[in-house]
Amino acid sequence: MRASAIEFRLRMVINTVVIVLGFWAPWIQMLGIGHRISLVEWLALELSRSGAMTFALATTAVILVGGVLALAGAVFRVWGTAYLGPSTVNHLNMLAGKVVADGPYRFVRNPLYVGLWCMVAALAFLMPVTGALFAVLVVTIFMVRLTLGEEAFLKEQLGDAYAAYLRTVPRFIPRLRGAPAPGCAKAHWLRAAAAELTPIGVLAGIVVYSLNYEIAPAGRVILIFFGASMVVRALTPGLVRTE
Image (cartoon, rainbow, N blue to C red; front, side, top):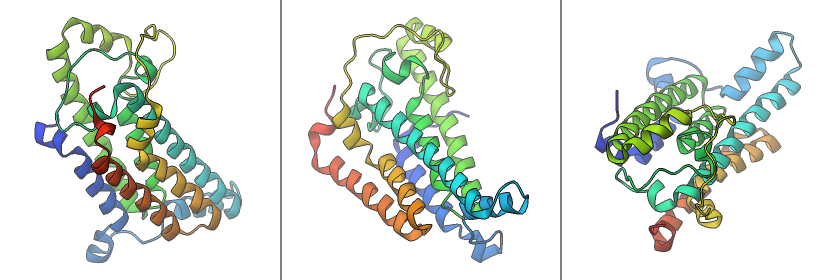
């Protein structure tokens, strides 16, 4: 069930491929499974058909849910990276320095994966229905496998200190009560924001979609932010220096 070292090394590539497949949904043309209607449109139609609300109100409500998920994704990713450091977040191998229990890590052990899941869930609203189901399901399974692999590695490397942290802080669902006392770690917000342009772009894309209900402009915004994140990572060595 745990992810292998090669899967961890290629985690960004794998997640990107899953998202691309979610939007493309090649099985619709090849096998006739599903339709090209987006999840946001399908949900709005189903809500209006049920009589719960009008189509216009249902569309607004569904987009609002997608926006909340996108906002959560951006917040968790930037907040987590600000305390863990871009160098650790983007490293190709698992690293074990010390137990980090500052910032979001006081309330949830894996804020970066929670942020990733929220980001993909927000993107899923713009995908065909079957593509959305595929992307969210595969990313969820992959996220759990990565988490189990990292936890086993950190438990072996950090010993009792990490074992105590596992007992105190939940894996995926944040909990405010019983959180460890904050340490003295310093957050690096600007570097974190620069390292996490993709989830910020997803939030911007959802906002653009809410203005005109067109997926193409939203997709262009998301691609621009994703491309910018790749350029920043390539051209700014200081972004990923050791904290």
